[in-house]
Length: 282
Image (cartoon, rainbow, N blue to C red):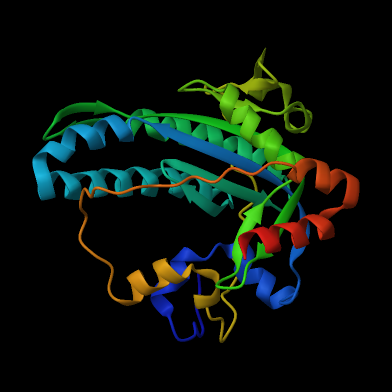
């Protein structure tokens, strides 16, 4: 990625999805847009067990957890970036990636297959707490993706609507070692890449060898782009203060689940959903 000028908080730039960077240049005031693309939702299993075992080793164990997680995701993301993928979200040990432009279903499928192969190579680890095996499951879908930039303390990028629900359901149906495509995405893929129906989707063959696809260059970061408004206040403060050392910490975590987005999207459209999400997040 080429950076000309990056604004007042350059260390925050890696925390802003490429979609949000382009968004501010193309339609800075828009709260929503519908993108034609493919989503790849990847979940890595094995981190929790590893973290629990290494927690007994104190600070050294925490540092090892951070090193293993960072190394694993670096390897997986390299495969996705090679095919023009863009990371939208980390969710614990999960990744949400978007592919747009020419042949995006093929490139997303190629990334899913390639990431499974890479995981098979890097997922068997020897740690100070013993041997750990990491595995990966993935779900994919292609279609019109509802994207939203909402909130006041910062602008949070959310994806919501039927296409995102379909993507999540594909990953939910996949076991470790499997990649599942929705029927809509499978229809855009060569039959040679597809295996048997599995749950609500179709399994993508890990032994297949899809073409790399055309080289999709990353967009330039526009001059004077300020990433700070797209990073949450607490994370922004933590990072600008220099971050911290890896540690295991006693904490209480809350997870908020909300429903009704698909119905609102389908019956009233993305503008109505954007307004509702903005109110909720704010």
